[in-house]
Image (cartoon, rainbow, N blue to C red; front, side):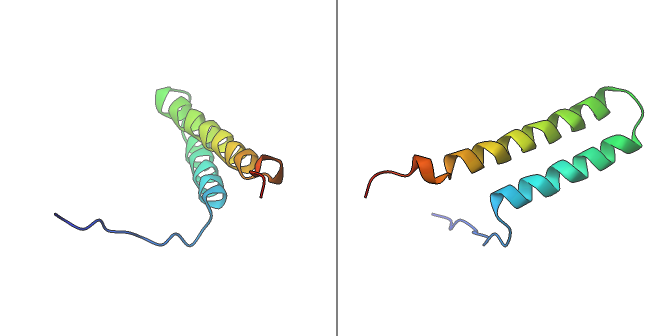
Length: 66
């Protein structure tokens, strides 16, 4: 059985999503109206939503009782 390659993430999920969203928006701003631009903006919005969901899931109010 082959071993899985594992990479240690240096940035948090929230930070990686924020970087991705920023890069997608900057690429979209360089494009004219069209499908590719719309797709980039949609993926940026999805990354923002995922970051907010990660914040919510990791909030102290959702911790199980000790």
